[in-house]
Length: 389
Ligand code: SAH
Image (cartoon, rainbow, N blue to C red; front, top):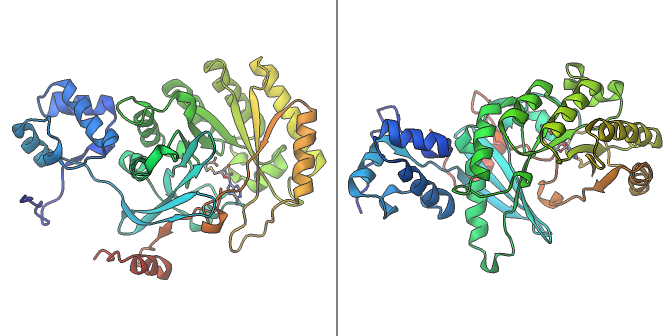
């Protein structure tokens, strides 16, 4: 069929429907298009359940409405520059957001679930010393469309696999960026993840991870029902400020207090504390004891057993880092000390490190302002993606 392409000399004012959650779409259909609300629901199903993005293919919408949509709206999905699968089944996509920026999204299959690790920003401004994303600096926030677009690309790709062994059951906002510094877009995208007309994930299966933006943790507790993970990485302020500079602004006691408020407001849910283990830096028995004390204080304040869960992440190296992964024996000893102190503790085993898809290894690719980045250019070339003018 003939497609009418938009005039490239005119600015594109069409609304990207990927930017709107259910409430936004209902508003757009009722107040902008003068249509009934249920049309918004039909569109959501086409986009998020059937992965259809051409209005012409949305057969239960009338011709007149389709024409109106062509004129006023679009469904713009991220461009897949490449995807790679690791020996352990982990899959990573490099997605082009615009001609200058690409970000990474990772799918991690496990026996009983499949988790997608989603990015919220291009780069990151927080400068955590042990994270590879920090080395590229901060470029920009992702839009709601660019965040939910990552879920769309992965869900569609996984949906094509026979027998549905590789399913998407969980989303963690643990990719590149600090999600609470891109609050509105992240909250809207998470609402589409949880909506039955979107990806239908239960509250507990969507997790937001933060380096500790205290005021935004409180705001989050008011507007979204999702699981909270906090990147702690050190049990005292001196060490934490060194590793996570944001700690200077929001020190540990303030951070823990905001987590207590979060857990209390979401009755019966636990908070996960992430702790990256670095050799000789934060992996000594003394650190485990201090951490156990913090976690017990947290359980007491929330008045719930196992309100705090600790996730130990063996450090994943990247080029140029001064840190090393803790010895296996120290990791085990650290976990044992926590468990002896009745702290629920898991060790997150490294997945996908052969394709640089492990925690803290995501860095995406960014052109600098003079459009110099040999690596990005080569990636585009290798994957037959023409660089934009
Ligand atoms: N900014 C958010 C989201 C990023 S989540 C946050 O800080 O929580 C990514 C998780 O991986 C965080 O817990 C982060 O601290 C951890 N991480 C970062 N670099 C790592 C590395 N090199 N090895 C292991 N874990 C790392």
